[in-house]
Length: 360
Image (cartoon, rainbow, N blue to C red):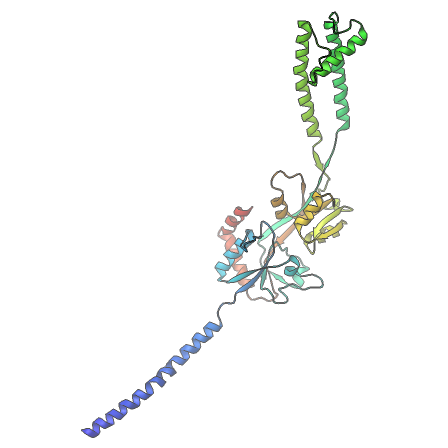
């Protein structure tokens, strides 16, 4: 009995010693799987953006908003992307002849902010499905045109009316002491009275005394005020701002046009014979127009419409140049089908229209 108990005790101790090892062997595969899963955790995409209202609005507190920002957030939600926005310059996003895009150098993974899809850009970077189609507008400072012929005609009629009214007033008041009975200077005194009455100057040197003269002068006063108001409004309308004609691309030839560097606007301006002045932003190009340092600026339609929504004295002409904006990625990026699928789904289910209507 004692031998049996001793043997059983040794077996029990053997099992007790082997239990931690067995547990470790069981847990090891689980730990390896967990470690691999942790190593394959979602990579946060670096999304390059630049200020481009109303598509991308960068605020001082670091918050971003705008049409394309909201659209990207919806794309990321559906594609299950995590990301960080990286504010950059436009040339960093698309690259130049000498400096490659940050996409090419692997400093960012995605780029957008009013970037149009062009064959030249697609040689070095790739684009997802078009998500916004727009055009170019040319902003020009209005030229004031004064209708000298109409002003001369109005003055001639006014002089004739004053002359006739002066003669009539002299006929009514020539027997009074203040207006001479002679034709000269009596008629000129009557004309002087009419002029001072209509202009509301009223020097008081000559004034009608009879009730007939005063009645006629009161009529002339009322008529004169109405006449001046009508003439002033008509001349103002005729002298309104009329911008230099930029109704089509051929009008750009020979004009000094401000454009953003490395933009589609620059390509269009050069192709159509404009004298190009390159600047760093569309808003800077507009400022050059307002300061009359250039004839016009060629800018993307969303920027132009946002800048000149209310009370603008700048003339905007819509040029028939189509631009398609896209989300830029590296050539061969495996995320392209996922992003394209999200964009098309957003368009099909009506979410795109909701986002669009909030910003345009």
